[in-house]
Length: 255
Image (cartoon, rainbow, N blue to C red):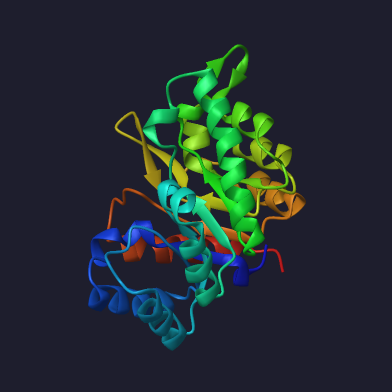
């Protein structure tokens, strides 16, 4: 892992990205903290060209996005055009649509349908990835839903965005999942888990209890391109949380 591969997930800062002016101010702060790349997620309405102008002006790279599955499915050319404008090849979905969370057959159906959507995106130069939570660790006929998604999808098209916190939350092992998805784990969400008053909470990377040496080793082995820092809920100012995570990661960086 190199520092140049570390990015900030803007979902962490969603309360500060509601307008184009907010987005511009936030991008400047993210750059000042020390990040050179961002994953765009939960941004307020903004034209693709204006977003490009803002990130280019700050010297930031859009390494990936969270884009709604419905938009990918119904208007893939728009997704392709916007991502190509930004110089971004990774389009991920932030969560599984509710209609596919109803059991084993629904997970299989999504894996197959999403593979076809991913194929359309791939024809435009994009890489589709799936971001997990913990509900996908529920088992059906001996397999977790997450395993079903990867077993039943096209391994050349349906890629992963493993979220380290949510895997742990579901009783899984993040390093193990990244290892088993070698070649498909282009993006990984770095998010720690701590315990406060007997309950699990999201924490800055390195401030919780996850085994980061094993996770980073797995990422290097799997060929992960981007290590994306995210914290859905922060115990302090979210900008401060992103800064703590970055400083901690620098100490773990393999150059």
